[in-house]
Picture 1 (cartoon, rainbow, N blue to C red):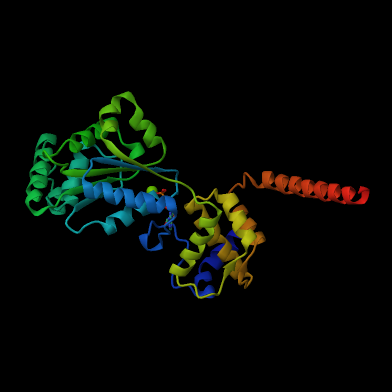
Picture 2 (tube, rainbow, N blue to C red):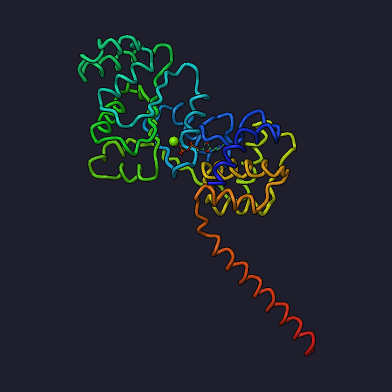
Length: 321
Ligand SMILES: Nc1ncnc2c1ncn2[C@@H]1O[C@H](COP(=O)(O)OP(=O)(O)O)[C@@H](O)[C@H]1O
Ligand SMILES: [Mg+2]
């Protein structure tokens, strides 16, 4: 209880205390904070290239919190202005609702028309025909459509079938709409099921985001601190970052939670250096596990023993020679 109250008090002040212009470790998928780890950079590059080449369906997958939504938003920001884009964040919609959402995002129908119920009466066939007509009308100006669906591992078989139909809209030369499915790792299994075979065969890119390793984790933390306006008023101890890695498994969302909490704890004791103890306190107050901590202690002890044994052998050799 005491920890919660202290943290709530700290949360109002630590940005100010360390001179940040904004919170460095927010959980929002804000592209301004994007750190281009090799896996994130490669995924963005591949997605942009697939969209540009209109190669059909692309899949971006990764564990929870690895940065999928952030990557999507970054890709959307970098796309050619000519493209009409639709980012669908709710995967629990029906096939018709998906089509309406896309028409709305592309600006083919107005929000007012949807709200007033005029579009509700349109059949699935009419909605697809309207979309097809619009996409075809873009061809002379070299434009096309891009549909990105987040949390796609939750899509129903009916909607996946709708997506397959959309992926079939094409001219002799290229696709009329580029589709990007974004989801957790089980999305790949979902697409491998026999009933999704047709859609799976249309997938031309499978990009996977991986958690950060130790070097990238450090660069990530420094990057986010500097984007938030850090001016040398706070630093993380090297060993503290080892603990962050251990407790987060290198998953950016968990790194953010731990670093945010440890900065609150640091500010409460006027600390300019975030220590291992502060990270441990943050991890405990967040209720996170450090699964490999014990193992690491063992490793350290065993390494210590090995080193001692090694020195002892050298010493005994020297004595006996
Ligand atoms: N490469 C990255 N650079 C900066 N921040 C990142 C990166 N990857 C993830 N994050 C941050 O981690 C948090 C979770 O990312 P998010 O995109 O929501 O993950 P996911 O969609 O995979 O669950 C967000 O605060 C996001 O800004
Ligand atoms: Mg997400």
